[in-house]
Length: 365
Image (cartoon, rainbow, N blue to C red; front, side, top):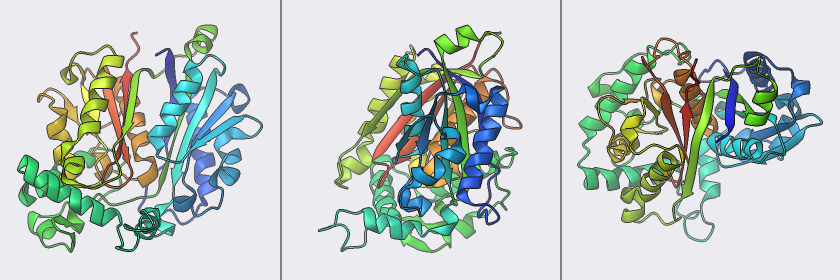
């Protein structure tokens, strides 16, 4: 693709950010991304907002968030699936040739809303909603299905939590946490067998913003150097039913992965140096890693993934920001040596119904 990441910003994460409104978080993050790109708001011509009315606890989230996110008197659109979906739309808008320089912004203050209550409202109203389906139950069904299909044990899931938390400890952008013991995870409350509270990544507040430019804009402004090129994107939505094959088949993950690699001109996942997976629990992390099929030379979730910070709705866009920083050599304490290509992954929906992918490619000196 002829679309470039000019700047990124990641709001300092915390379990709860109580001293700022969501609008203030969006403003500060968008402002920081513009500063990182070395451009002014007046230079951008569009905003792509990734926001959820329910999670944001606002009747029309874009009405309140568009202006502080940089969209005042700009061409503005919104997606409600996930932060990574916002990047997909923003990149396509830049690639279409009608818009040149824009912002993608996603923010999340999950600490002020009961996510599981929101999940119950999202269930199909005549069957799923009366039985109380929520994220925990859907993820428990997913965990049981992949445990049987891929022989994933509770001990393996617990070790994956510890592995991700050790990686997060090297990430200066992560929320600081004490490393639990295996017994702590095994003894944590059972939410929906075999899923326990200790298997889930803690949800945090946070925000992510990214400045995207078309190739035409970049060629007209050679004084600006991009962080990365978006080499390819792909996404897909699985069926709504939570049967065993839908849960454990990982068909959309596999087909989306093949598609994004092809679009990026890659023959194998092993041509990547970094993959940042979005897995909201350890069972999903192990299953996705197996489906990825990468060799040991590929660093998977060096940032710590969702165990570093997990601004729920924005986590896929956060992964894309981490991927861009990796190929720019600016990731920090978890920088992977020689990272030239990095894959960002995001999910949304019950039991990872939707999967999205973006390949970031480094810019030659």
